[in-house]
Amino acid sequence: MTGETLLLVDDDAPLLNRLARAMEKRGFIVFLANSVVSGVALAEQKKPDFAVVDLRLADGSGLDIVTALRNFRPDTRIVMLTGYGAIATAVAAVKAGAVDYLPKPADADTIEAALRANSEQMPAPPELPMSAERVRWEHIQRVYTQCERNVSETARRLRMHRRTLQRILAKHAPKE
Image (cartoon, rainbow, N blue to C red):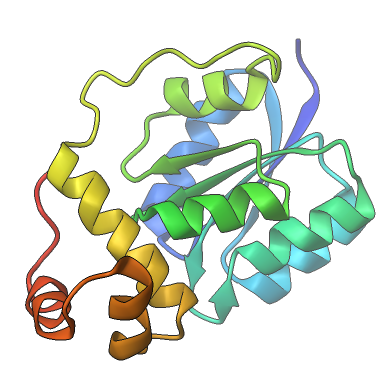
């Protein structure tokens, strides 16, 4: 399968260029952008078959590019990349129209597999799934974000003492 168009959007230039070369070797015609503005402009101009978009860009959120891609070409297969993995952002990316959400660093083989995955097929189980502590921490973070970072409201919804929640929020995320 050659000649398929791929939009890559990331503000990390070395990663962007390395990924572009790897995807060109796999037969993709690659278009590069390093910001939300240039990503939306290329999405409108090229209407690519596939897209790989970083979640956090210097000038905004990659979710804006996902939304634009869905408007310009609804069948574009989009994968979100991020160095800031959290369940809440993964859910937001999929709701916006991404077919998958991968943590950085993701290699070209993993990205291509995500882009070409059959949507009816269940993905393979992860090699290193999140620990129970990490899942709990992610859930608390999601509810905290949904409550607009209001500790009292989050504690009420989680049926947890406010001080206990504050101690949990003050700690770093547990290891995967």
